[in-house]
Image (cartoon, rainbow over all chains, first blue to last red; front, side, top):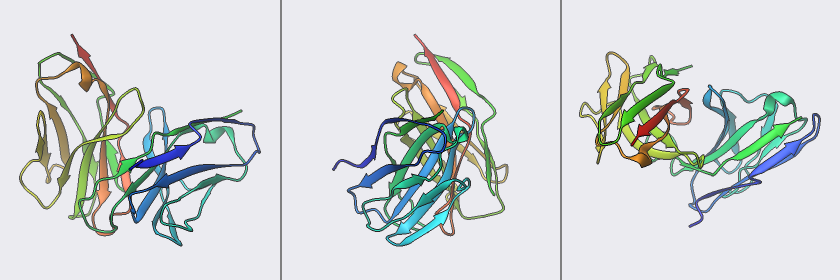
Length: 115
Length: 115
């Protein structure tokens, strides 16, 4: 198993550009999520999905779109990048939704800089 | 929304000694899960230990143990026989129990291990 993979590892964007951060998992996990990590802020949940075709907002969803057309993939889209979106982005997945002690598996992260 | 507080931005410990990292949280739920994650310089998030709120017994994983005080909403991590490889950022995290879909992280504690 490759686990949770993220591409790219690093990205620099100009203000107003759009891009998609890719996330894929090969563990047949129902639940997938995106976080951003900022200095001194810990990880904050952006969006999550409990299965193909089902997504919901987390704590900081503004400026980001997601979709889940397959179980494996959960891309995060920035439609018009802003300097405030400079951050490290993590994708995570876990088996099962709702109650259950299943742990989250994290991808290696994408460092995004918006100038 | 639930909040997770880690009041120690930095801690240090002598190799082979014991260190305790603090975490408190605020919630009105009775059913939830708590986690400690380790993030080394590689940026990879690694699960250290988990605790189900309905369990009174404190979780242990080899040299890692927790002191879970539900009434006080406290969840501290004890690392015994500290090793150089334990040096990392440690995050406390809370997961809602009813849906299990929302995760909240603390701001982290940077642990230095002194040889």
